[in-house]
Image 1 (cartoon, rainbow, N blue to C red):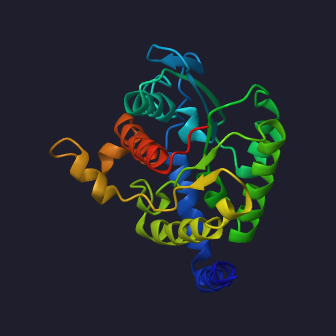
Image 2 (tube, rainbow, N blue to C red; image 1 turned 30 degrees about the vertical axis):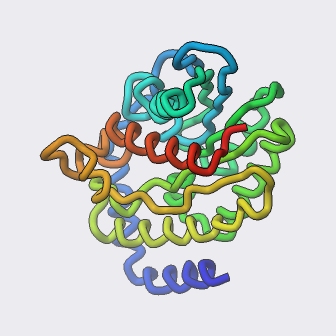
Length: 258
C-alpha cells in the first residue's frame, strides 16, 4: 500500500536526523506541563424532552478533556449541545477515555467497558498517541480495525464515527522539524483508515484534515494559532467547540444517528 511505502521512505530520509528529532522530542516532553483530564462527572444530559439520544465518546486525551475543567467545556459537552440544537432531542452523554491511550490500549481497556444497552452514536477520537509512538500506517489501521470489531461485540448496531485525527503537524509546542516529520506521519495515518467505513456497516470517518487557518476565521478577532491549544499540544476550550461543531455538522449531514 502506498502509505506504507511512504512511511518506510520517510523513515529512511529521516534517519540521518533521528538523533536531533529524538532530542527535540525529549525537550518538548520536558517543557509541556502535565495537564489533568477534565474533572467532574463523565456522564450528563444536555437539553430536555423525550426520546433522548444516547451518545458515547471513546478515545485519548482529546476525548478525556485534557486542557479544560469539565466535560461540558470539552469535546463531548460541545458535541452534545450541537446535536441537541440540530435535532431537538435531549442528549445523554458518556465519556470513556484515557489520556495517553493508543488504539490498541483503547481496544484492551476501554472497549470492554462499553454498555450493553443500545447507543445511538459512538464517537472515536484517537491518533495522537499512535503518531507519537511512530506506529506504521498498517499497524495503526490494523489496531483501529480491531477496536471497531471489539466495539461491535458490545454494540452490534450503533453508528460509529471516527473523527479526524489531531493536527499534530500544527502543534505550536513542536519545532518545525518535528512538525514536518509528525505532520507527515499523521497524514499517512489518516490515509490508512479511509476505507474502514467500507469494512463495517454504519461506520463513518471524518477524513478531512483539520485546518487551523480555517478555524482562525471562526475564532474571536486576533486569535492566533496559540488560542487553539491549552499547552501547545492539547486543545483549548475554543478548539473543542470548533471541532465538535464540525463533527455535529458531519453527523447531521450523513444522518449518522441510530
